[in-house]
Image (tube, rainbow, N blue to C red; front, side):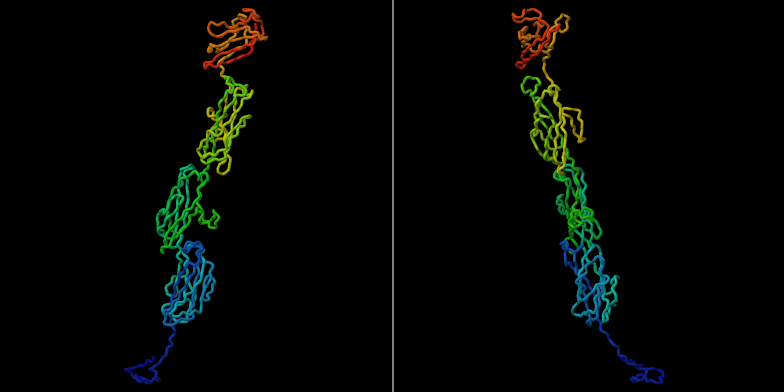
Length: 538
């Protein structure tokens, strides 16, 4: 390139303008050196390489492959190209670095790269995602032998906002939803309601839409979440109800999980299995603390109520309590708790009692009135005491294998003492065996005319006019006989014989012990007999 002074109105003492003589100082020639030029640019992307949780989208625990594409828009091929890539904290286990790149201090560096104008150069490496969040990855061309007309390569990459086409940043799109399910129960009986609350949080870094929840326990399929589209960090809510069953009460808890589903901007499905709200504890032991089942406890109230009743049986039919008569007991067992009770047996400590029946199982609320019976034979002591009293015990097992025990109650006893504070009474069953004999015989007379005990009286016999009374002395000789005794107009025994010829009639009998035999017919036509000693004194 040559330049000279072409004209001048003044006189130049050592040059002539426009004479094209290079040796004169009004003319100069310069030949510049032109360097190689390459317009370089960067682009970055990532793809899922190992889908650790098999959810088909990039998420925590997955391995991704980063690609840095260097393009050269010419006009010359580029040499001596260097690239730096800053690794953010959310990525670990960096590996498979291509093209001789090295990792140092959180930066991957490539050097001495050639980038031709016809084929972009792609650099790759792998990384494992260790946490959710917006972890932006920065890359920049750090060196080039050629001139870049619109960018200046830095000698180190930085994390500023890219303003030139030789640098770029990239944030992996991580669509992620987190579902927490909690339950509150209204009670512990069949039909009581558990109200579940579902809290959905967008813990990823992209918008997720069309969010619904599936919960097989509550029968909720595609349960709508409000709102159904969540930006990163936003939350949505839903509720569902479940009616408690007897099986749930027997288990003492309701355990289940739900699933939330949505769509990321690419239309891919985003899924999460619910957790119980504490994502730091692995309750179910699957090494994943974020998917523990929601457990709603149900209070178990095992309880049995036993009643015992007895019927006196006059075995010999004499209408009198005797040794050998029986008491036949029946038992009613009711499951008054809210859980099923199994292997129910009945024991009775009364000596000599024979218990039959069982074991049985009773569902909550079920009553058994026929399985257990018992028979007891009266002893002389029972007859003397005039009553038999005792208590039976029923024992079963609740669903946890714990014993459920109750003492029997006499339903006819209104005392209602609750010995074990279980809400039902435990009164002993008392069977009275006192005689209901309508006849009362006074066994002594003093026929001395003082008006006191002068006659042999039999109270109640007037109600049985069809009767015969006989009195014998100690040798078995009959000294008195009368039909219709105690009936109007019939002579009472006053210690005077009306017997056979061996004893003079109308004679006073001597003081001593005699023996009477009474026979009478009841209203039902049954013939009854009573006998005993009679004492005559003066």
